[in-house]
Image (cartoon, rainbow, N blue to C red; front, side):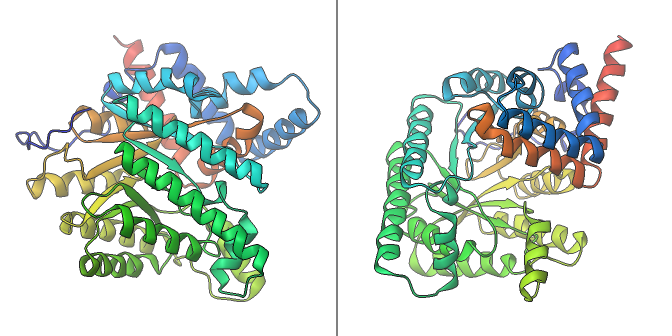
Amino acid sequence: MTSSSTAPAAVGPPDLQDTATAFAHQSDADLRRAYWLFRVIGNPTVSALGKILSELALFLHLPVKGLIKSTIFRQFCGGETIAESLHKAEELRRSGIGTILDHSVEGQDEEDELDATVVEVLRTIQVARERGDIPFCVFKTTGISRTDLLELVSSGNARTPAEEEEWSRVEARMEKLCASATEARVPLLIDAEESWLQPAIDALVERMMERFNREHAWIFHTIQLYRHDRSAYLHMLHDRASREGFHIGMKLVRGAYMEKERERATEKGYPSPIHADKAAVDRDYDAAIAFCVANRARISVMAGTHNEKSSLLLARLLDENGIARNDPRTWFAQLLGMSDHISYNLAAAGYRVAKYVPYGPVREVLPYLIRRAAENTSVAGQTGRELGLIGQERLRRAAR
């Protein structure tokens, strides 16, 4: 990981189909396990059955933790603790890839649990401060606030005095994390959530960027471009930052709650916030990449995507505009265990790349793992692509 921003000589676009580079960090046994795992989660019936059985087994305290930890947990998680996950961070570092430690425990609404999340994220910031291979830290606002409170604040409805006090505690947690990250000089990503929670999150993060991003983008917001209003939001935020003199940190993702968003819109009778088709999502995502690169004096961007075309677009725009591939204002990011052909080949070509490395107790991280399995099942071509690339690399090794 280097902070230099000297533009390298043009060497052409990265080859994302280079499986030798993509899987150099994996043994033959690792590839066999990954191939088997993607075949299982790529089958909707088997995947759904596995979700039910794993939840039931853990509820009944059956001895399945070892099986989960040696299969899906091993593929998508760094470990149960920060210390365990640092072994994965070291492995990624050897390939020029940074680690984003992601404490992936969800669904906690009690005050002591919310305070515990703050303590854990502060630990990740301290570890990142001490190491050179953790370029970002991250958290979800639902980790520091009761979900129903976020919905209430987002709605604009009146709050009781008790709710006002509760919200003040949320604001204090947010400020504590952002101040700590800024002091440590560790950029902090704040993930996007469901549309009915997002207005409160937008307001909080904008306030933090305005306060802490005066000279540099330490605080990063996230926008989900499958929403048809987020492109306009990005432009509005840039106009405001330009007027008020702060920098924007922005992670671009396509989105994670499409089915839930559409179902809720239908149930409650309001227009869906989601684009009508994938083509519109892709158009807005790629336009957002281009906008961020064009306005790099004010915006630092992380392209959080498993989409090859969008990844190559950002790589090409950097090269065409004479921007160093390792410019610290531009990052690519993928999830651990997925799209290694993007992550490792971009890193090998000199671009800044980081992997989200979730961690936490197996039982508490299971909801995250189930979502990862569902994502691979529902995203068109995702599982087939992973299987095809792994199969191609296994054939290449067999032919040596």
